[in-house]
Amino acid sequence: MLQGPLGLYFNRLSRYLERRGSECFRICFNGGDRLFSRGRHVSHYSGTLEQWACFIDDYLMKNSITRLVVYGDCRLYHRIAIDVARRLGVGVWVFEEGYLRPDFITLESQGANAFTQLDLSVDAIDMPLPSDKDEQIKIGSHFTRRAVYASAYYLAKGALSHFYPHYQHHRKGTWHYEAGCWLLSGYRRLANHMYDRKIERLLANQWNQKYFLVPLQVASDFQLLDHSSFDSVEAFIEQVIRSFARNAEPDHKLLFKHHPIDRGFNNYQQLVGEKSKQLGVVDRVKYCHDIHLPTALRSAIGTVTVNSTVGLSAIHHLLPTLALGRANYNLPGLTAQCSMDNFWRARPPVDGDLVKQFLAYLKHHTQINSSFYKKSNCGFGAVCQRILEPQPDYHSSLLSDLELPTERQVVGI
Image (cartoon, one colour):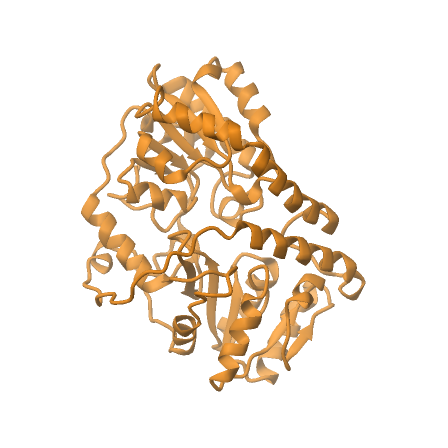
């Protein structure tokens, strides 16, 4: 196991596996990893990124590793390790946040999101699945526990940085900046409460069935940076407002929703206000933080996203959705296959039957009813069963090889 979710999840999972006869190894890259890593086989990598491929090659062979388990397949160290593991014939399993949130986590063979190896053809999605007899457990919110884990992780990362002098983190910023942002996130959640309730009332009344929802993603999200043509959230916001101002119906509105995990790190309210004013739509564009998402989706007339998992929630509500990046749900019948300029006025309907089949297919092959951040309902039995079974022989959908639209194609210029 390399880097895992914030907190104790990988530590508890390794103990669970060991009690059932497996031997688990961990590699720490910084003090945060070290804080949450326990066990007999914990190693610490303090070399350079350039030396990492040789190190992990030797490590996998020397310890007879048969499974490589990571959280996220786009981190620099993970990418290199996955390439080495594939060359050596070592099975690869990738955890991610759940596609079907908040009650699921993602666990896929070889890669997740746009690197999925699932066959996403209509024939595969149409195949009958075994009936799910287990009752789904409601997981609920885990923000507070995640914020505590994050603050502790980054404090430990900073305090022990001298042990890992060459470490390159996947998020920019110093350890005290990261820890401070998580604390700020909690404050902003409380400070924005009254404003967000005001926005919810607006959506339920004057804006009901008149607005498009735009869920923003975390600024450092690899799904945005690696699997889209956008190099920043700001660039995405500006293009959406520009296209909306030029092409949407005069009585239609636009609502940007900030990502809760990015709450303490970024605030785009000023950018949204200035760009809307510049393009003459300031009265038709709003920005919010923690509104109730299912209610917002039910009241909207469309969703525009890069590749957020909110897009899955949107098509579940049969809401016309435009995905501008690589996304495993960006398929004909589920999402609009047109430019953003055309989407505002011509929103193709969602195929309800295909949605049901797709969500069941995704749930069966990639989702586990569990949480990374709660001690109960960890779903370790299902996780272990999947990790220890032979690697599935999927026919890759090759999403990662698809050519992304250019900026001109995105806005239909």
